[in-house]
Length: 626
Image 1 (cartoon, helix red, strand yellow):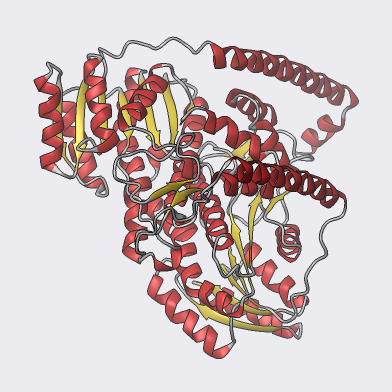
Image 2 (cartoon, rainbow, N blue to C red):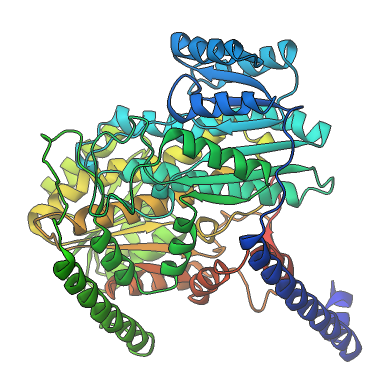
């Protein structure tokens, strides 16, 4: 060990390492320029569409809607189509329609929420049809009402179908794709996987999660020494006229009309055949979203208000043209001018706030509830909030550690209460919330901090690990929000802080389910913030989503980093201080360190492979814990 220290401080070694880094920087910029130019060319001249006549494509939700249209159109291209649906009757109708036109199709009835059924079905398909070379995870549901009206069963079912089913099919089919060195995985995200929408909080969470899963899985396979020839395509459709969007509205029906299922299916197949990594329907939505992500949040909100498009709640009586401003040319011009003026103001305000942050609110009258308060960042936040005069409610499943945090706060003359609670159990959370209300008072700051991070390849993750990751990292957020948000609304004051991660900004190797869960948190927070922003009561509830780099709490068991001085593990005390400061200043997004958020936003403007080059250059991540 001493010899290593001596060599690392040797001037000759340091000079040699500096030359290597400089060379890598030049290579990075050279490749980046090439990829940008290539990306611009491919925007005009798309890659050629490959022949799929020799492929076997499996499509979930093939009995109706886009799934049925995808099946029919793939069949016309000579592809062998495997139709999978929980509804045997409609699934067989799709198979019959394909065969009637001379196509080749097979039908399998399967409940995609059951991992065992998925594994058994995929084994049958392999034995009876052959190796699936194209997987299209299409099945999905979309309950459309406010979060506080969504039942536990609705939320769980939405995640079971829209997210967890992806894991089961990928784990069943990816090994054969890797073995034969040929495969393509296509997943249906949504425009609700790019931005948050009111009445779609769980749905947005699922569609953001799909983005994270695909980014992380493609990164995981790219890091595989075997370099398997497996491609990935994520699709972001606008509202498709399949019956899923039951009560849509839009101010500009000619500009933002519902997409026909035939058109959506054709665009998806074209994207898959051309090997596109991402595609939106219509195409401009992806570019529009990337552009607005580089502007202040309220600029995007103003644009969204101008377009005035979305869904009405499916629990309320229908209101003709609800949310739609009937307009003429004069009103439209006035609205556009007003929007542009506000854009300029928000842009200038944002630049000013970079130099002069908003004043930090006091928290001495607040009741702060922190999950996972027994250790790590949760404990540090509890101690620091107490030092600021807040009443701290410590929640953890570990009674001993939680009690120790409470005792430490009280020894320092702070005010703290401890509650033992399993955050994966909705009933326990509800019961604890009643106790807290009676014994402490209304919680005004909720910090959803508890989380776990299994760190190994997706194909080695067990069903129990994947489910537990989502139970703690995602579902617990819903149960806590549904328990404490009503009190905040009644008081007309509240703050909700949620822990995402740098793994909620970009996909990372060995962290596929974890990335999915942290992308989901982004979607949940964006959608809930939008839902309350459009609430007629204009409740004074603020939201802060936190994206920490690796924090030295023991969660990152085997981290690695090329530049430890630039990207060192963050101390939990530093992370806690940054989170509390962000909450007190009303910041919507906080990354730790602060530059990561800006770096991610800027790099998203460039082709995706530029981001990949940057990750390779920085070479930071976690090794498998197996």
